[in-house]
Length: 165
Image (cartoon, rainbow, N blue to C red):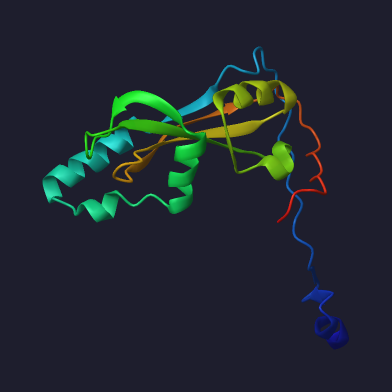
C-alpha cells in the first residue's frame, strides 16, 4: 500500500485521474438560437457605479481591465452605441465568450455574434457571456449571460493537432 502512494498511482485509495465532467441532461429546445436562462447584470453594474459616486473610489480600482480583455475588445469586440459610464469619451465594446463542456477545446474562447448563432445549432448546451469594455479608460463589467444550444448532449470535439497549448 505504501508503495502505491510512492509511485503516485493512488493516494489514500483515491484515483489520481481528474473527474470526468457530467454531461448536461438533454432538454427540449424549440429554437436553439433563442437565448434562455438569461442573466442580466445591469443592477450589479448600476450598484458599482453608485458605489463609485458615493464612496469616491479611485478610478484605478474600477478601470482595471486585463490586457488580454483589452486586446480581445480591440480585435474581436463588437462596437455599441453606448458611451462609457466612466470616461464618456468612447463607445463601449462588447466581447463575447463561450463556455461549455460540449464545446471541448473551444470552451473559453472569444466568439462573434455570427459564430455564436451558428454554434447554437452545432452544440447541445453552452453559456454565452458578454463583457462590456471601454478601450479608452479600461472600464469593464459583465453585461449579460445566457444559454444556447439545441439541448442534445454531444461528445466534445477533439483538439486539432495544429493547435498549440
